[in-house]
Image (cartoon, rainbow, N blue to C red):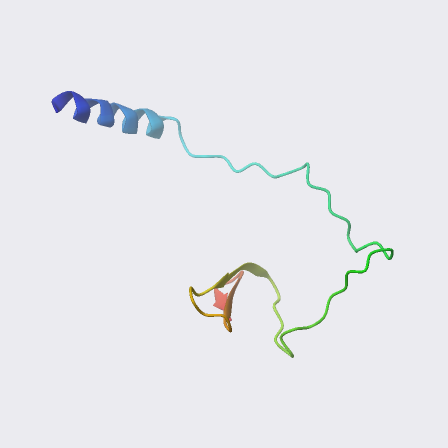
Length: 78
């Protein structure tokens, strides 16, 4: 048991000694600014007059089919 604790402590110290994780931007993802006109896809406003300025995440509550939560930059939750 003492050996297990020592190994766990060594693992924690070793991973912590590596420093903070560095976030690297994705430079390989190239999406078009607009859909090509040859596609049959389109967009429509599904939420009437509700506008999101800087949405970051969209989640739904489990077992609820009529509600979505949108988190915006700056701490706004709609």
